[in-house]
Length: 118
Picture 1 (cartoon, rainbow, N blue to C red):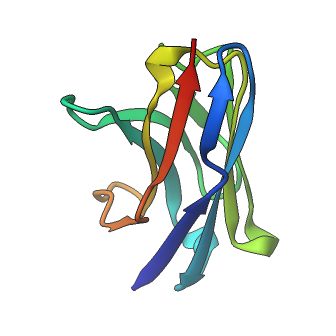
Picture 2 (picture 1 turned 45 degrees about the vertical axis):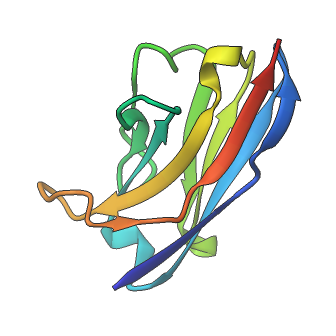
């Protein structure tokens, strides 16, 4: 079992920045690929960004490229999502999740709300 707790969400004006954190406990964090997802009201959950077990590779949805940066610190069992140039369309609940290589995202956090005002 892996427990994940997100933090860092909040209300920000368009153009602003937030950094989300995902604190992991339980199994060895570095054994897992980590991903960030989001779900806006009335919409399907969508992939935002991911990072490999050692910190690379990183990969992004088109909506996140150039604005968001995913990273992790395995010594701290924590992953991050730095979000810059935020837009109202980025408003959503953001979730972190982990998976083993070639597996499914089986472990999820409870989510953190990000609201971007225009």
